[in-house]
Length: 199
Image (cartoon, rainbow, N blue to C red):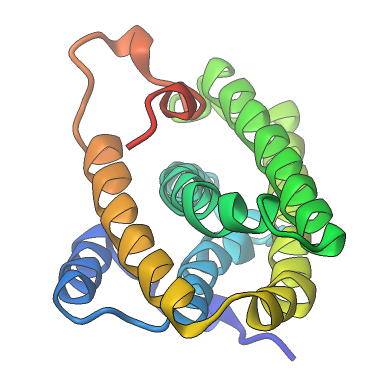
């Protein structure tokens, strides 16, 4: 049973940055750290899927959600997914490739929401698209935690996990910093642009 994230105050970006900073000094368990980031996404998913949530709360959480999705998603792709895609077992490769495809779809939906100017307006189209994205990512998280992480535990050794964990933390720090630093040109804002600017 999942935790009820509506009953708690979501973690702020300052708290998340602090946690990542601490992880840079003390390498965390990769799977546990990724699950923590899943929980941060779930905090916003709960609001986006709540029919009683206010428009301003949904706008705020969609902004937060897209930043966390960009940070976690790209860092995950460049570490765990890349390792699984190169594995000698087909089941690991298929899981990694499928998860990458799901991320690509999520980034495209994020770009569509940004293009609809969700921070300044809110309508049925935006709410529907945000809910579909939240549902898709929630299902993706469940798949990762119930299938992918088990495959990773079978296929990766302790050295793999330690190396990937260090890389994941560094990439999270870089992506979060990039996402929270305003671009010099507002037209540059896009969830998928960093897909081509890998750290």
